[in-house]
Image 1 (cartoon, rainbow over the protein chains, first blue to last red):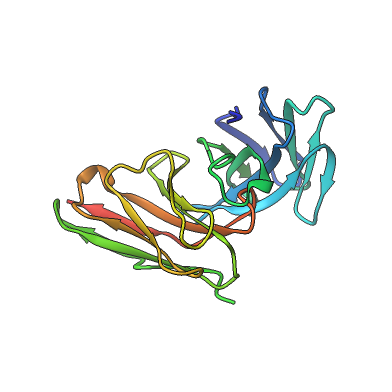
Image 2: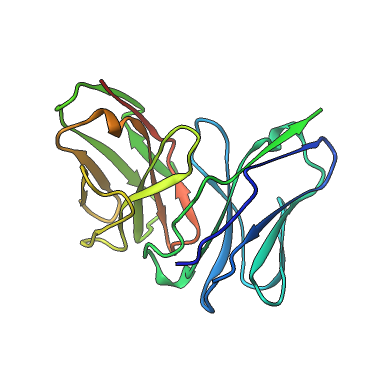
Length: 114
Length: 111
């Protein structure tokens, strides 16, 4: 089971680009990297998932180097509403429901200031 | 579509009481999960069900039982509640384990 390491907290300002890095040194060949966002008093929400190189959607980008031992979630032009906890998970998305990749850890508490 | 729904939203129990937390999803997902989240902590997996008719233990199963009633519903039961089970409980469902949809949570206090 691949373990992930993220910074406990980060802060930035509105309009800035924020990059949150996750380390996963023992990632397996079949593992995908998934990021979730959680606001207070709500369940986590899926943001983005990737396997290698770069993935972009309407919310964020995910950068994965060739060795896949780390990944970086990039949030462009953040606003106050991006203040949340961000979780990085690593696991085999093809297992269709196994426990692999279901360790959320403590996540990164991102605080955006005006 | 309602997504994932959980009932109740809030519950207060006395030590030793039992209760069942209900979860239902309308996305035709095969897999369903129960997590608990304690203050300042990440989510910890209690039980999961990869498909209808199967359940497996997660990281913290002690003190809990689950039932996958059908494809839509996955319930979590506390047979004899303890103060250590005071937490927020989240249910989730998915096609594959890495893209889960979460419910709004149940806030449980055990006195």
